[in-house]
Amino acid sequence: MEYGEYKKLYDGLNGTDDILRFAEEGYDRRLLETLYVQKVNRMVKKRFHAVKSKSPQMLKAWKRGETICQIAADHDFPPMLVAMMIFLQDGCGKKVFWEYVRNPDLLDSPETAAELREATEKDLAYSPDANEKNKERGQWGEGLLWKWLDEQGVSYQTEADEREDDSHTGKTPDCLLAEPMMFEGKKIYWIESKASFGDAVEFSFNLKKQLIPYTELFGPGIVVYWTGHLDGLECPPGIILEDIGILKKKLEKTEDGRD
Image (cartoon, rainbow, N blue to C red; front, top):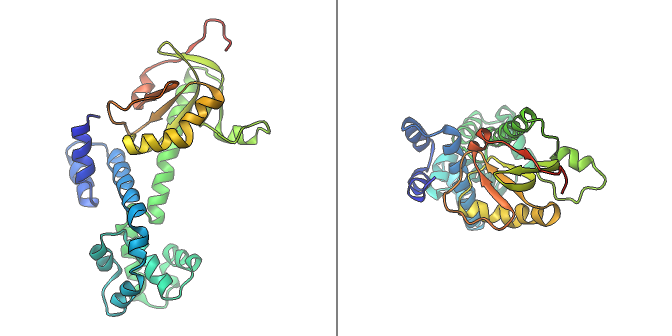
C-alpha cells in the first residue's frame, strides 16, 4: 500500500463509523479493523498512565451521573479501559471487573450493567469481542499459510510443534520448514504469519522482537502481513516481506535438497 493511501486510512480511522465509511468505499473490513486497533493500541500505550492518574476524577464524574461512555469520550480513551479504571478506583478487583464484563447481570445495578454493556459494544480494541476478533484474525492468517504449504506438499513444524520439541531455542516462528526451500530465487528456512498491518512502526517492532532473531537462529525467512504492508519498507538481509499475494506464488526445492 502506498503511503498516501495508508495515511488517509490511518488518520481517518477513529471509530466504528469510519470503519463503515471506508468499507463502503471498497476497503477490506479486516484491514480497516486491524489498522484501527493498531492505532488505538499505540495511543493507549502513550497515554495510559496519564489517563489512569485521572481515575479519581473519573469516578467522581460517574458518581455524579455521567455514563462510562461519556467519560471515555471526554478523555478520548477506550471505554473498556475507562470502565476498568473507574471500577478499580471504586474498590473493585480487576478479576471481578472482568467477570462483570463477561456477565453484567452479576451487578446489583441494572443501570450499571447497561452502561457496561454499552462500553463493551463500543470498544473495538479491548472488549472480549475485540480480543476474540484479534484471535480469529491470527488463526485466519495461520490457516492460510498452512493451507498454502500443504497444497505444495511442503513439510514444516508449527509453533506448537516447535514448543513441544525439547531442542527448540525458545524463538518459534509460525512455520519452521523441514528443509530449506527456494522462494523467488532465495533460500528460506521459516515463515512468520502476521494478522497485523505491516507499517513502519509494526515492522520495526517485529524485526527487533522476532524476525532478526529468527535469521540469526535459523537463516533467511519470510514474514507475511495478511492484511497488507506499507510499500517501500526496508528489509534487512535475510528477511522477505510479503502480503496475501504470496498465495499466488510457489516454493521450490533447492537444487541439492540440502542446506
